[in-house]
Amino acid sequence: MPIQTKLTQYRIWCRHAAKWLAIRGGLELLSLASRFHLLPQNNYKGVIFTLHHVRPGSDFSFEPNSYLSVTPQFLEATIASLQKKGWIAAHVDDLPRLVNDPENKNRYMAFTLDDGYRDNVDYALPVFARHNIPFTIFITSGFTDRSRTMWWITLEELLRKTDHLTLDLDGGEQSFRTRTNLEKRAAFSLVSDQFDVNNEDAFVSALNKAACRAGIDPVSIVERETLDEAALRDLSAIPLVRLGAHTVSHVNLARTDPARLASEIKRSGDLIETLTGDRPKSFAYPYGGKRAAGGREFDAVAQAGYDAAVTTCPGLLAAGDGTRPTALPRISLNGLYQNTRCVEGLLTGIPFRSRGREINPVSED
Ligand SMILES: [Zn+2]
Image (cartoon, rainbow, N blue to C red; front, side, top):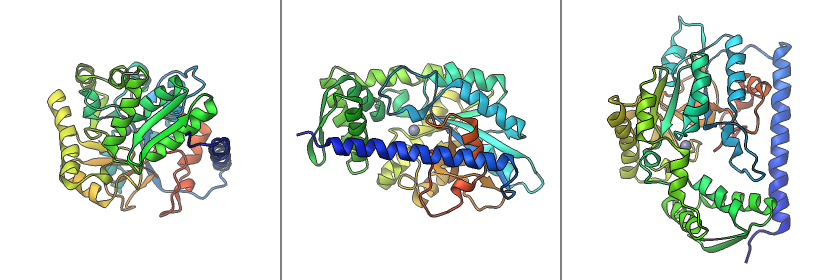
């Protein structure tokens, strides 16, 4: 039986719409207050941006992962806006040193792109090159060698194609009616929630089986979406580009045992070293929020020799703020908020002030 009622579907839609309106409105207000110098001075010296896809908008009416995509125009507008305000671009692994140098009064921005999408080369690279902006792409080695699939895109394509979805998950078989966009959106939300309570490998496998039954090849999605070894080798020869590690299987590291934790961190770096000849200096935690990376993971990444590692916990960097180099916060350039005023609102730092509370306005975690 389909588990989501019409009421559940509307509730999910309303919750998302209300959240979007509240965040958008709040950020616009902060931007306005900042422009009129109504906010107290802050001492932030560093910001790290999270990006995933950079590509033109699509015509799909059902696009649950749209928050992961920004257009090249928005990226360019953001860069121009920050450069105008005096922010200087730097590589993410250089940021802790630059920000914590008491003699250095500059403000620095670092751009990072997770997962290694092909559109990073097609659309982001030309924008970064035009503005001479260094950037880092975090590579999941299992995507590069096509041994791991991307559940969130597999699920999107599966729901777009089917009118009914059956998944064999830890709790047993679950069915979802997926005829309308409202039903598809609700199903995406409900299935994504299952990700947190299921064995992750089994969850990915169940989705892959459902995709194959529907005539969708999950491996071909990875081939279509992500850079292969030859493309990464070419990319690494470009001086503006650095490659960082992003695990082997894009697993939530907080849910792994010690052996797998160490292996995911080390082996993803090994692939990059094999391709480029250089050991990567930076690392990004998959999903990256508090439920995906904590003290144990920060220690493990430091012990593996990385200089810097990024979370998706939102925040800015200030000199002497005690932020560990392997627990750096980031700000998401989110596809649902493609407006430079929203970025200005985030850069006030006010949305992140209440430490300890889950304020994660435009993150993907
Ligand atoms: Zn990722």
